[in-house]
Length: 227
Image (cartoon, rainbow, N blue to C red; front, side):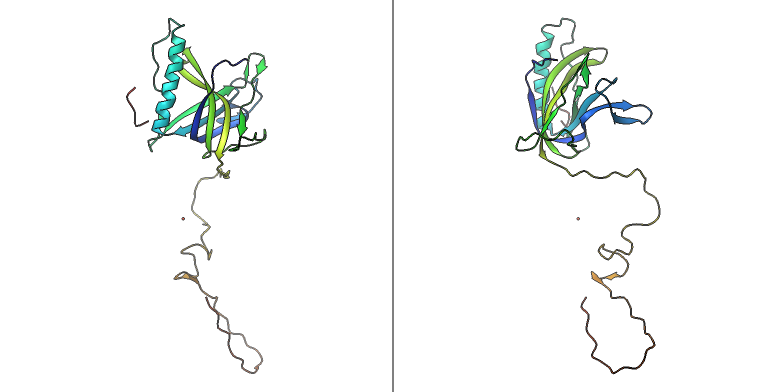
């Protein structure tokens, strides 16, 4: 599928739940997105990202310009569309970019990922939530049964700062053993006093009397804006 729209780059945003190493689809049984074939129903590459109010305003301005350009040739389209961004509790804004796994009989080209020096990353590279990135997209205005707006078609990612992958636990918290118990390196652990580790008490043993020797001493971290 030929792409004629100009590329727009969203600089220095935070990656959230990236799924771009391969196509994914939402599995109703597992209630989560799972890797899939690009021709599967619902297959797509997708990434959410977090941005500041200033970044969100600039992005929305460019989305509106793209939409207005499309409206000129579409008489039945509304003159405007609602702000699609979600605001979090810290005053940042969240949106997403995606790309279908295939259009018709043609699989799409997988979004390319680069490092900060613009070196292409391997196909098996796994971007992580919390990484700082630049996102290259094209604007696709739409109006129909799915609503009205401008989608961001994902083209490429540049990783500016990589957040190490953290293992996630399938369990919930419960009563029982805690890692700090009997750990001399954790504040408040048993056997610790005033920041010093106590020497284990010596147990007297009966033994043959030997000449006395000298004891050795032991030292002990978009508020909603007006359009």
